[in-house]
Length: 63
Image (cartoon, rainbow, N blue to C red; front, side):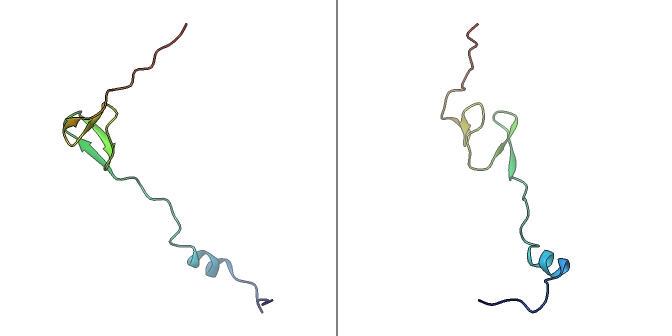
């Protein structure tokens, strides 16, 4: 089994992990509904490519 001759420094370790980071989601303004939504996803109101493809889900409270 290979054993490193020296301890890997913090700088070396962190530079190796420089590409591992969070990215912001691609949000786009939907002119049909007037809301922001993720790309290639149905809007919360059920629109996709300026067409209604799904009904808006309404939550009911059972009191």
